Amino acid sequence: MDRKGVVYVIDDDADVRTSLTRLARSAGWDCAAFATAQHFLDEASFDEIGCVLLDVSMPGMTGPELHAQLLARGCGLPLIYLTGHGSVAIGVKAMRLGAFDFLEKPVDAEVLLPLLEAAIDQHADRCHKERHLHEIRERLATLSPREREVMDHVILGRLNKQIADDLDISLKTVKVHRGRAMTKMQVRSVAELVHLCDVVGERPQVPRPVD
Amino acid sequence: MDRKGVVYVIDDDADVRTSLTRLARSAGWDCAAFATAQHFLDEASFDEIGCVLLDVSMPGMTGPELHAQLLARGCGLPLIYLTGHGSVAIGVKAMRLGAFDFLEKPVDAEVLLPLLEAAIDQHADRCHKERHLHEIRERLATLSPREREVMDHVILGRLNKQIADDLDISLKTVKVHRGRAMTKMQVRSVAELVHLCDVVGERPQVPRPVD
DNA sequence: GGGCATATGGGACCATGATCCCATCGCCGT
DNA sequence: ACGGCGATGGGATCATGGTCCCATATGCCC
Image (cartoon, rainbow over all chains, first blue to last red; front, side, top):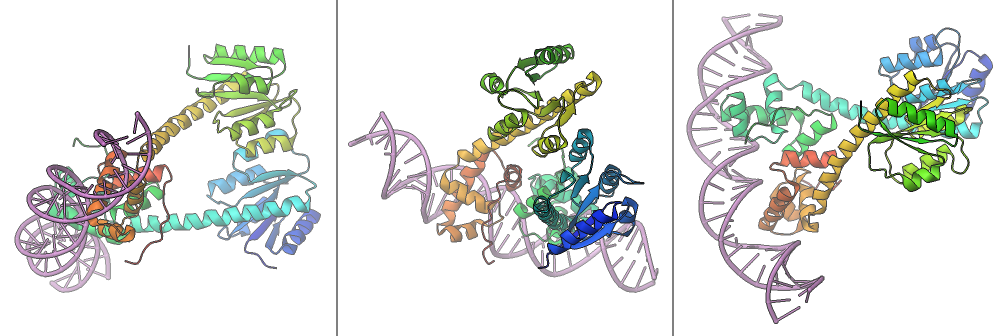
């Protein structure tokens, strides 16, 4: 049985890598194992659905250090820490940074496999939403400065007449920019436009002019 | 110096309660201490800005058990665990449930005080946003069923004509309901209406009819 | 210099939305 | 039985939005 997703294993212990790889593959996932965090950073593509199983303490870059690196690179892979003798403080800090889970070795397969599935599902879900946001941002990027400016007023609920007054241009020009913005954003109603902008968090805080 | 917020201390050790209470008060917060989780549940009001400092292991209800109780009651108070001899698993689980932090005793005042401030600030912020959402939901609750139905179509970008067709009523009636919905929601444009509904997560997934 | 995108504007026309007036009908609670 | 409210609908009027046609001017790139 094949599933969609890659399990990345990062551990300096070859035996651990072998057994985790075997476990993940037996459950149907692809698996790529690395002996150091640096190897993982160098070789992994980061553009696939998956999750990361990483050891806390390794020669070179440690688990938490890798975590910070991934956060800095905007990589959204869920991280599941595995540790032999971790401390409370390290575990709590990892969770605060957004780790998916933090487990102590030895880990039971019946515990780990559902976790892997949940982590990969979460990542797939997030990637899907992220792609959608990216599409919207790409449409936003096609707007000319003036079109964007007019759109910002439109999604605040301003009338064409008011926008014309705000920007000191004619009503006619507002209509042109507005129509082009609607076309470029691929929407046919103000409601859809506002919703798209809400989804990507584009809410200009233009001061509400007097009515 | 007085600050806004209450620090709730829950610990079975009277000395710990005394010292934490003194610390919190010296920093300007109100403080209420409880010897058991049950006392806290019985006596605290939960409608004030604040945060909770709780011990993990106590006679009767434990810290994690109280945590679950608070979650079930929809209480948004940030929880900061304090533990003398906590395990990694307990700490990680507490963080997964949304604890604000999980510290090991003894806790340095220079660590705890900034945490208290951050937790209380976060709670104040969330309460503020929650109040705003509540206001909007109250407006939504004043809509008649038909008004709500029409509004659901409006925020999907449907034209009055299409809504009339969908609901099998006259164009005129749609206008009436629409106008009343706008008044009750206290908005003057579709853009504002859509934004309010986006904020409270009210996005009906009415199947898009053929155009 | 010629093409292209951007910003600007006018005129005309139609569709749509908003807001008044008016009305009927049914249901619920006092 | 009466009043209030929700839902329904018509007519009239005006403001607004959308979409065609047309045009000019600027700046940029090849």
